[in-house]
Length: 242
Image (cartoon, rainbow, N blue to C red):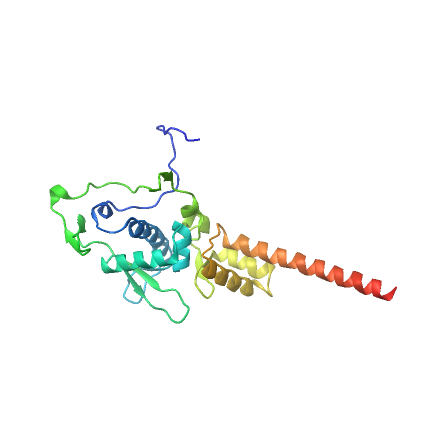
């Protein structure tokens, strides 16, 4: 069931989609990935993720991108290669088993597009796209799902711009308050569960609305299992003595 928009309608979460992408020879997958990465770059801006040269970067594992847009890892790799050839992204290796740093790039001029070969070229004023706000996108005729706004990339789900990356793959996002609460409530295991979540998301491409809540759920679940196992062991010991 769909509703008609009115003057009072609040727009659903959407991605920033630069108008210059409409005039490129890039594949649709590459365009969507660029929009997703551009959205992620706003989080990097909020958290001050810059290198020693002042260049903004983001960290987004390929498996996570694939999960976000519903494509295979090989398709994502091809699209990232497209974006790199078009000089819209640049990837820097960080070490063995670590996801790359991704540097976002924009066309040199305010109004720009691509030549057919994929290299940037300045458009003539009369052919330049109109200025305007961002827009969402659809896939195969269906409205875009909320998955793009519910994963670890969305600032609103990270309790503001104070969220910082943790874990081996820098993909577990926690605010200072959330981290402090986990350390206070689970002093012996908080770091272990951050690493578990980091490795799990990296290997599966899964995303969660709140990483702090996910860790709490995992700890509670494991504690319940451990308690149940101790009860079973105790019952067995009592029966053995009868």
